[in-house]
Length: 375
Ligand code: KG4
Ligand code: ZN
Figure 1 (spheres, rainbow, N blue to C red):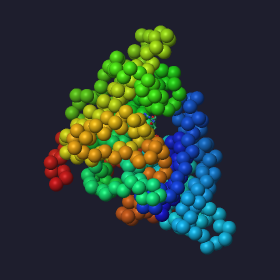
Figure 2 (figure 1 turned 120 degrees about the horizontal axis):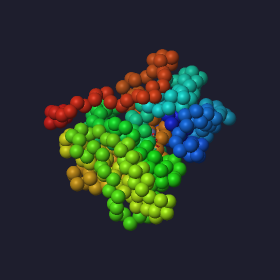
Figure 3 (figure 1 turned 60 degrees about the horizontal axis):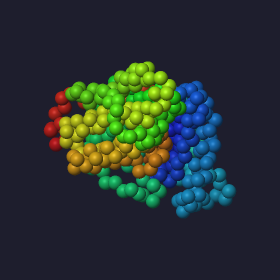
Figure 4 (figure 1 turned 135 degrees about the vertical axis):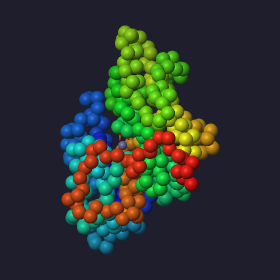
């Protein structure tokens, strides 16, 4: 049983997992704190994490004990929910990067404090490992089930990352491509801001796009379309919408906002799909696991489903909505495989945040000899 914490960005999240099963989880979102600033402000994120984390730990422990009574039968009368949980927990997992340094520190300090107090071992987890494993998370009853069949293609699309990888075995990631500038979510957020909407912009653009006539009137360019590699680039799209908006007065803008949202979302989705299809063709891998906040987008999900169907493959999404955005449950599930590999922090002094932590254990060099890569 693993108690996990993630404070990498603007969600204070805590979870209790057992193998792949999530026994309890809680995410406190700071969106309202950051909304007026148009993005996440690190110092405000740190303060909000500090203010909330103890309360969230207490709440998640209470909730988990209540919802899993047979598992947490306590011999001690009147034991606090936190003591009851830590009586059963084997390890504590914490995100150590990538993310905002001063936000990560809050979770790490709390994890170290709990590890000392309850004499538990610590596991450090890469936040992006978590997003990849969010697809393989189960509810407390063990659903959905998944029989692992490596390798998988992994697409991670969030506010800070856009990455395409191969998961060759548990926790063994080969990087195929990543964004050279802005992440997909970041581009959606910035475009929404230019259109006058608050952070986070992705859901707003999706809603507006759904209200449009669903025709691509503006046809923004598809970045890196002809590049042979599997990298992405989204900052040019931001400039493209900026330039378009400059030619419009306020009345024209408000008349066009739905169609602009549709066209922008379409450019992002098509660019992602194109690289995923190239990856399927180059690697021959037809099982795709997808994670990260942008995958909350239903249109992107539908398009990915269609793409993988065309290639007679399968696509795996996080099974519940809370698993798309930042959460500690996915950290707990990834940590389970770290424990299996014996990857436990030996000395608590060695546990430090790594804000620019990367996921790749192998950086693929092109062209890759895929035919021999997985035989
Ligand atoms: O994974 P996440 O919660 O945080 C990071 O680790 O970055 O991702 C947040 C990103 C934001 O850019 C947000 O606009 C985007 O996910 N997002 C969406 C949707 N919901 C959240 N993008 C498109 N469509 C959505 N429905
Ligand atoms: Zn994330």
